[in-house]
Length: 121
Image (tube, rainbow, N blue to C red; front, side, top):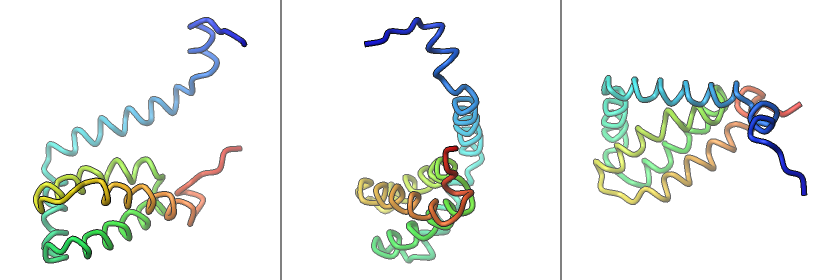
């Protein structure tokens, strides 16, 4: 069993550019959330599906898959989950099935293009 020092582990085995990218995306989502755009999109989508849970489930899956094909999976999930959680709260629905739908749709949509799910070289 090999042991590494903290310095060696943090300098050699942590991909700091990935950590910085994810941190930056989370900061951008936090700032964007203050503008109210997520609530606006959530209410717009609720009106489009007339508040029907099955239609919402279907359309959030399609939106996630298309988003993951055009963006990377993490970005798509970070953008859609706040909208989804607001919609679920407004409609008084359980979050679990919708979040699983987002996860599966993100993975399926991400495999459609090289952008959505970049291969590791």
